[in-house]
Length: 116
Image (cartoon, rainbow, N blue to C red; front, top):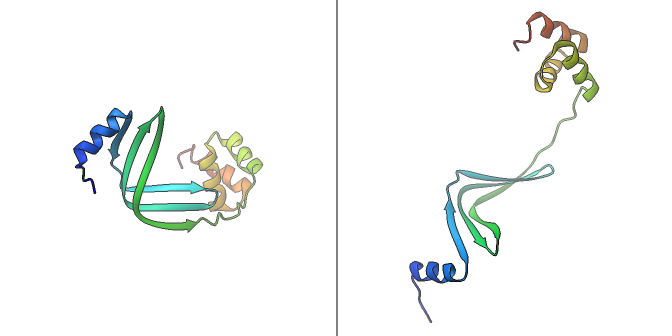
């Protein structure tokens, strides 16, 4: 059986046009629809070969499904609050959820001069 040290392997890879580099990471999250694959304490290697970059990741793997709650307010509701008050969509949605009412949200945002 042939045994090669790490430097010999890296030299051979370089001769073949393969480069690898360690990437520092605390956590890797792969999102697909409502599913997440979470890799904690990962070892991440970036490998360049033939003009392509690929990543090899090892670590503690867990999966999680995100149950997205149904939104109580439509896009049109948020747009109305945005147009009337000049705030961002995130702020409009947050205040809509907080107050539960379009008119109250507009009054609240108008009264505070957009400082939410």
